[in-house]
Length: 633
Image 1 (tube, one colour):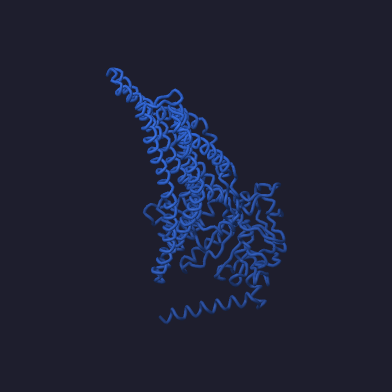
Image 2 (cartoon, rainbow, N blue to C red):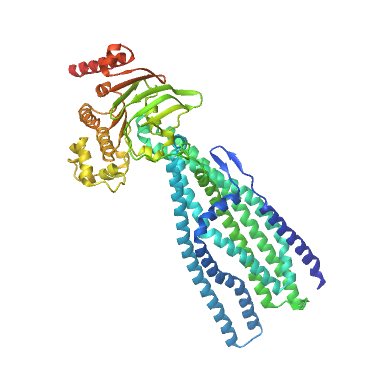
């Protein structure tokens, strides 16, 4: 019997040493590395934050754990029962005893299957609730980001974070965590059961543990890197698709389909290569584990078979046919969880890589935030003052240089100037879409940096050149889910801005469908809807940024009429491409290279014969030439 002892002792020593090595390796914290917008996080940090979302559902997970014990019991007991049945058959016991043993096995199997079903259902429900919370928190965080940050992050990347990455995380809560714990318990339970059957054969199995540790350490390193590549390439291709599908009409107009297809093919191939690397890493790891399983079976058949045939006895234990059968099944039960852990580890790397991307977005703090002593406004009269305001999008490249002006309540002020002079920037700063670097901007005498952003914007209504309409109906686009707005108020707003003229001609009126970005309506109709949307929310200050730039002459007359009505509502700030639309403004501010060069009424500026005079006559001359050409036709 001493022929086994060298192998047994060697197996015990290297096995225990490898377990200590694995524990020490897992206890080492991953280094965190800052990478600008994206940053690498340690696994412990990611898991800690994910567990924060799981904490409210600890009772459900505890219940799942209780149910899971039955399936663990099956994995541990079934080989013993099968071995028992084998010994009953080999010993030619009465059939009644064999039937009882088989019946016991069937009962345990049925209970295990039922518990597995209950466990899966509970995990799916709990996991989806957790992921729903993650998605909501991520969407809320994105909503709070400043314009500067939203301009810097591609839309496709944000969509990928909310959809693909959260789906990958859901695997962790619906499958990985519980099954990971289950497999660990099965390994420990099976190992203990094998020790009870035969110390020598069990310690022999430990000879293979160092290789498992080594393969796991190597696999962990390469699989995480591979999954990061896959996530980055997936984000890249989604971003490309989001941008190019939105602009596909431009691609068709300029006949650039082949060039775009070439770019898409390159990104698709990059994703394919990343996927191949991921598959290669896992494709090497699992066969290696299977090789260890086969090797241990061969050792069992050789050593255990020799002991059985020779009738050897070790430490009072005699190797029997039932013991060999049970041990054979236990080896399978021992390596199956390890192989499952490998596959789950594969998915775990995907989930951790996705969680890393999601938490990167969640860690972003809005550039513009409320001051600690910020106040909420109960009303706004509409007095606006700029005091020596300086602003730049890029450090050192000033867009506004010492701009100062004063707007009284219910005044209409227009900003004119060449492209890049700072007109739109002024309107963005008033709403705190961006933070200025120097000077002060006052609303009713209060610095806007001391006013809560949500409170400030509540009193502003913005009508932009590029009107954005959401998919839905005309009604939903006007009220924007403000359910307290009545039908009468919607109709009154539409009549006020002349939008009722085309809405009444539609088959479904206010309930007419609005397709993506409102592409089933003309530019003028979309602009009138934006006017109605602004009026129905009762703003005190109205901002129009090139609202009449792409409008036909007939619609311009309607809009001009609407603007004259809207001037009576509150303060109006306008950036106009067509100077004819601002002639009745109380004050016209002329900008050039970020500075105010002149201001006054339309007539006063014409009398000065300065920059405004040149712009007005240049535009008037162009319109006159255009009318002459149309007349000749």
